[in-house]
Length: 155
Image (tube, rainbow, N blue to C red):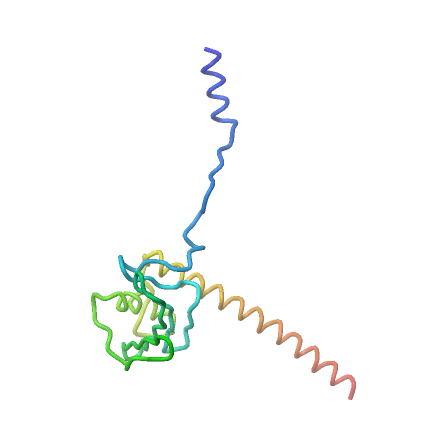
């Protein structure tokens, strides 16, 4: 009987610890499908364009440029670039367009209700970068207004 009580107390009183990675956010490269991988940390979005690093399994990374307004893509690899080509449905690049073109503020796109893990990571990193940029802008605005006030008082 005592052993059962000791066991119950030990279960309730001892806090368990979980080792390892808590979330998928630290991952830089995330699978879109079995063979296509996207970098979720290094990307640019400049309306209407999106720029991502992508790679296929066992190949080097290359730069993917997507024009969301015309639904075209082009790739760059070691100084060479392809011509603009249309993006076809049922391809990994179409998945990127479908999940992320709303970030370019194009009215033709809306955010998906349940984006996949790779898209969630990109959206979260993009929003984090926007907040950091806004904070930097606010700090520089405060500094410039203070400098302008100092100049006014000097004159």
